[in-house]
Image (cartoon, rainbow, N blue to C red; front, side, top):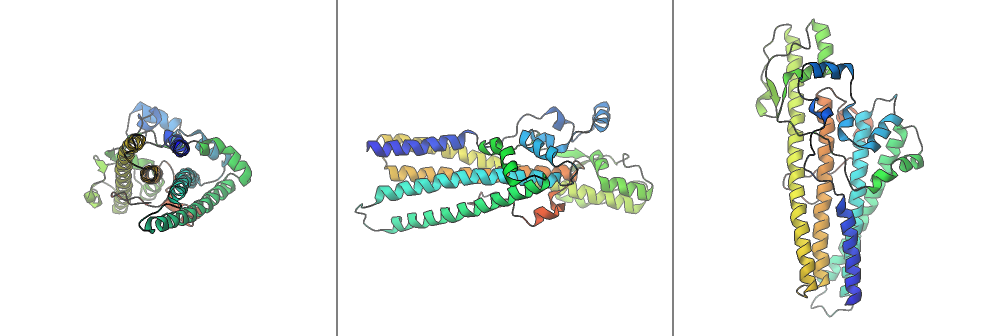
Length: 349
């Protein structure tokens, strides 16, 4: 019994390390940079145009900054940010799956040679081990593809790229955009888009003279826009507004999903701590404790994916308002798997 508790303590210690830096979905305080990205602030807006800030600075991630600096001269900032975020998520998911495999192995060892009334659970554990191993190999291949992509964009070797990102990949903290998810945006943000500036030049319009009103994620955003000038320019503005509304809707949805996933992790952690106390009192077995541990790991896995999708939604949103390119326009990334989707119902990953 003493040895089993030592092993369980070691597994729980691994969990504590994995959980310590888990990316929390709740958004941090809005940074000075991000606060000025969505609203017109008169002189402050003018200064921002004179001293443009890179959109990815909003993630406040030194490793991402290093990747962007190393890839100067290219035109794939959104793709680089998306691949880096996916690499971080896959690395974290790999940690959780390896911990799951260890917990299943521990359960199998505990019930070995036990006189069980039936052997269904032993067969189930064998299946879990096989499934975990397959998933681990898949994650390792996905990580390798993201590393190769980033190495190409940074014009360096994969070994040098991994050395550059070593500390970042050891950290369990996922990139989070340092801004509150906006509820609505002023129409003036459309003046930052290159397509609107091009349309204004073609039709002799002033892109800064946007109509009054706001953009939100409501479904009625496809209504026509009344503004002086050529009808085709008004159509271009309406299309741009619809794209921003869709990106904002996606951002708000992913934020809700990530916050729900975080709440589930909080509850799962509390339940696991309660299970450890029950195990210590002899009320449940270590086999059951490992079962509860795997449940927590699954919720952590879902949270990592949800926070990754939220970060990607920020990239698409920033591109929609003219502060970067949408990841949908990056040809290389369209051929690469990013993250599995996590629904509002928080399905298993």
